[in-house]
Length: 153
Image (cartoon, rainbow, N blue to C red; front, side):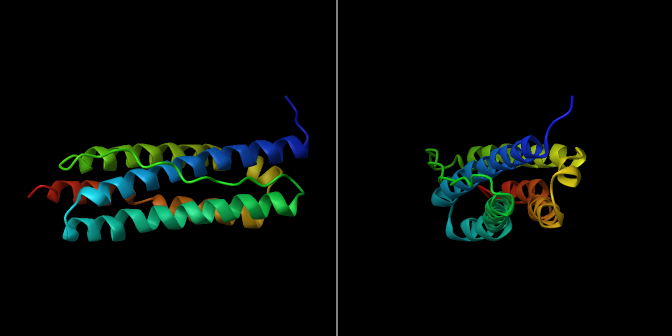
C-alpha cells in the first residue's frame, strides 16, 4: 500500500504524539510515587527516574512540534496527565505503572524507527530527536528495579 509524503508525515507525528503521551503518563506516576516516599528514596527517584523521563518528554515534545513546523503540519499541545492516587507504602505500584508507560513509549518509538517512515518522509533532526528520547529512557527499567529493591528497608 502506498502513501503520500503528507500521509506518512502525519502517521509519524501521530505515533510520536502517542509515545509522548505515554511519557507524560509515566511522569505523573513517578510524581505520585515521589509524594509518598521518604526524602532519601524520593531524591533517588527524582535523579534516577523522574529527571530522565522528564527530559525525554520535553525532547519528544520539541521533536514533534519542530517537525510539524518544518512541514507545515498542525502542531499538538501536550497536556499534563493527572497523577494517580498512591497510598503510602504503594510507591512501587506507581513506579511499575510508570515503567509500563515508558515501555509502551519505547516500543512505539522503536517500531517507528524500524519502519522506513523517518527515512522516507522524516529528516535528520527528527531521527536525532527519536534517538535522543530512546537513549534517555533506555536504562530506566534497571534503575527502577535497583530503586525498588531498596524501598521499604
